[in-house]
Every structure is written in structure tokens, then in C-alpha cells.
Length: 296
Image 1 (tube, one colour):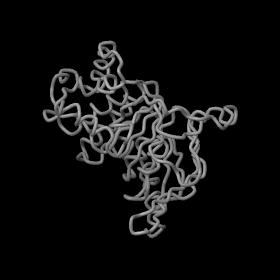
Image 2 (image 1 turned 120 degrees about the horizontal axis):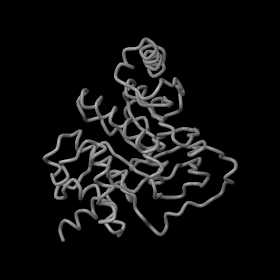
Image 3 (image 1 turned 30 degrees about the vertical axis):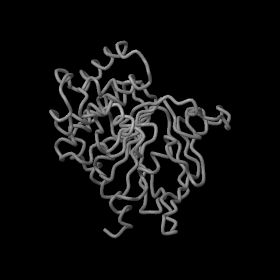
Image 4 (image 1 turned 30 degrees about the horizontal axis):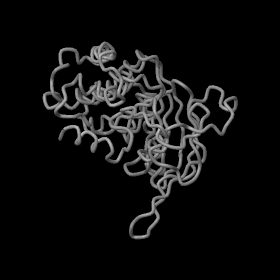
């Protein structure tokens, strides 16, 4: 009973309808259609002049985002890059419907986002695993939460664990796993419901450099294996952004505006050797200059 209450409390804390990528079913999560589908063609997500202002208790207004507009095609791997505290996570939460923009709108598959939406995966900075649940139980938790037959998803859960090289750890508890392994479990949990969109909020930021590189390679491999879902990935690491992305969206300091869109498409599949290429390092320096206001 205590564990059940803890799980419910954990789910509602801060993220309302999602926890580490869990898809939730709610009666009022329907997206209202206000735009004709043919206006979007192959556009999966359209962010239209989005701004966000937070009113603080002291009466001060903080503008996090200012007039953000972006179109994302289905299957694209987009990385949002910017300094810490610039509003990257806020933008992800607006896209998912967890918070509303002050101005502007977000459309997913031609439908305006009016509130928290289902059929997406959301992975946060921390794995947010339940310590009293085994690995396989953590992966299957969203299925259990939605009231579906868990046994029908066990094979898929095992396939995801195999895909992320976690086979053999199905019955381990989170405390018995490394940080990188815990994030793999979180990724499996986000994919168990076959979301069309994956939102990732600095999921590897707390890992050491070597483990982070390994997880980047794993993520790209899993992305290809899962038929290249649309991914929006947040980071403040320039090299990570360039290594992963089809396009890098460079945000300024708060209030965040889009400074530049980098569309240098390096061939896939990618290896760590990419980082040693002159072109890769030239673009890295270019982004540094943009983020530092050409002070280099």
C-alpha cells in the first residue's frame, strides 16, 4: 500500500502525467484540431512563435522563451543546444503539453497541443526508476499503470532489454545497476508503448565522459532499430549535439531565442571517429563563437 501511494505521488510530482517517459491515458488529453492537415504536409511538429513568461512570487516576471518558431519533420533527430538555464527543458515541456506557452502554439501532426498528450516518450535527466521494482517491472510499469495486460508486453520488454544490452539483468534492482544501465532501463520504459515522439532532457548529463559517449552510440543504434522515431534531445554539450543530430537548434541565454540552425548532415551510422574530422571541429568552433557572441 505504501509503495502504491509512493508511485502515485511520484508520478504526479512536477511532471503531472509522465515519469521518465511513461505514457499516461487521461480522458481529457485529447488534442483539438484547429489547423488543416494539408498545411503541414510532412511536418511532424510545428512550434509557432512560442514564448513563455514565468511570474515569480516576488512579483517579478521572467521570460524564459521568446518567439520560438521551428518545424520538425517526421523521423528527424533534433538537438536543442544552449547554456544551462536558458529554457531548453521548458520548451520540451511545452511541446509535450505539460505546461502551456504564454504566447504561440505547438502543433503535433497538424493538431494543436492543448494539454498533456499521450503516445510520446519523455526521458528526464535522472532515470527515475522505482527502487523496489526489478528492471523488467520498471520497464513494464507504464503498461501496468494504463491498466493493460502486462503479460502481453513481456516479450516486447525483453526485446527492448536485449536491444539495450540489458539481457541478464531483468530481475536486478536499480541499485545493482550503473548509472548508464539505469538510463538504458529508462529508455526501454519510454519505448515500451511505441511512442511516435521521444523527448529527451539531458539524459546523459550526469554520466562520465566515456559512459556518455557509449550511451550516445547506443541511442543512435536504438533509434535506427526503432525505425527512426522523431527525437528532440536537449543538451548543453556542443560535441554531443553535433554527434547526434540531423539539425542542431542553438538557443541564446535567457530569454532564449533561436540564434542559429546547424544543418550539417554527417553520414550515418556514426562512429566516434567523426569527432576527429576537421569539418566536425570547424563546426564545433563555429557554434562556440555563436554561443559566446563571437568573443572567441
